[in-house]
Amino acid sequence: MSTVDGAGTVVRAELSQTLREIEAAGLYKRERELTSAQSAHITTTAGPALNFCANNYLGLADHPEVVAAAHRALDEWGFGMASVRFICGTQSQHRDLERAISDLVGTDDTILYSSCFDANGGVFETLFGEQDAIISDELNHASIIDGIRLSKAARYRYRNADLADLEVQLKASAGAHRRVVVTDGVFSMDGSYAPLPGICELARRYDALVLVDDSHAIGFVGATGGGTPEMFGVQDQVDLVTGTLGKALGGASGGYVSGHQEVVDLLRQRSRPYLFSNSVAPAVVAGSLTAVRLAREAGELRERLAANATLFRSLMTQAGFDLLPGSHPITPVMFPGEDGARRAAAVADHMLANGVYVIAFSFPVVPVGRARIRVQLSAAHSEDDVRACVDAFRAAAAAVG
Ligand SMILES: *Cc1c(COP(=O)(O)O)cnc(C)c1O
Image 1 (tube, rainbow, N blue to C red):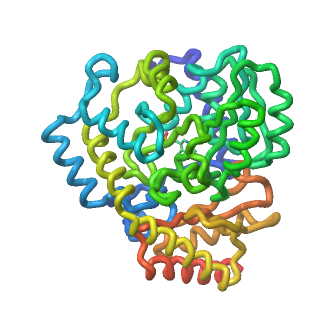
Image 2: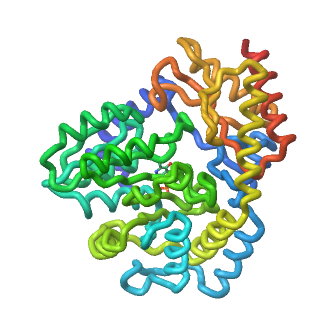
């Protein structure tokens, strides 16, 4: 690296200033290092902790069968692919995983990406151009926002889960050639579901496609883990589904777009993150295949997750905490008002010191005055773990006041 004065010195001084501003605004993010595998029971550099902030909904991140499948794949399929899919980066198991995901979500076909961020980055530009319109929920994930930016289509935004405003935007976008309504299946800061039946009904009326990013639902929402379209009984009305392997389905990495055959076939021809980025690693593919199988077969994992979420909600409500209503295992514990951000952070700190790891969120991640601790339940938690979390909330709230 150059040590002489020059343009670099100026840029680095500017960056230091930006970093100080982030710090002064209380927005500086620090990584907490785990010194164990991802699980309900972890250790961090702060000591042992019960983990209530992972997206490890089914507890598959360190599941023995998933780990064993990944071990076997290292021996059988090697470590890396050193190729994109269409050159020499497709093993039989990549196609097996795509078929397994199609079966899970009830679609014709599926195309894998390195992440759901990439899936959302590669889907809009390929399918929607200048003549088209994309109508997107205001709370959609950052990767959807970025993916839409890459497309030349006209953009319309509707208020979160607001069907009346969606209809206004559908009317405003009249005249576009192709139209698509885009929504997260589950909004991650609230644990709320998109109103898919109403969205599909409006989309049908205005002749628009529907795309659902089901990252926070795939594998555990719906009777067979097929996600929010399955839960709402609208699988046949949703045209495109995107999702991640990095949450309930083992939590390693990888994402997908799933849908009609022509859509997936065209994405294989034109979608840039698919064409120009490496294949998902063999051990991750094998572990994810096992995770998808376990998610489908193991109804008891989904049941335990639902039971834990219900128990947590009822104990916390009894204890007098203010929860956002809902049923998803994302359970926001609210700390409203001016002092909320400080209180939420103090409660989370107190809880970690007592061995329960939760994260407080405040502005700009959530609206001003709507600070919260987002608790995420897992099938890997025991009933005692859930009770310990509630006890830690009680003790922390008493200490913080
Ligand atoms: C987590 C998440 C993503 C990103 O998934 P990765 O596979 O980690 O890139 C995309 N969309 C939504 C809605 C998510 O919750």
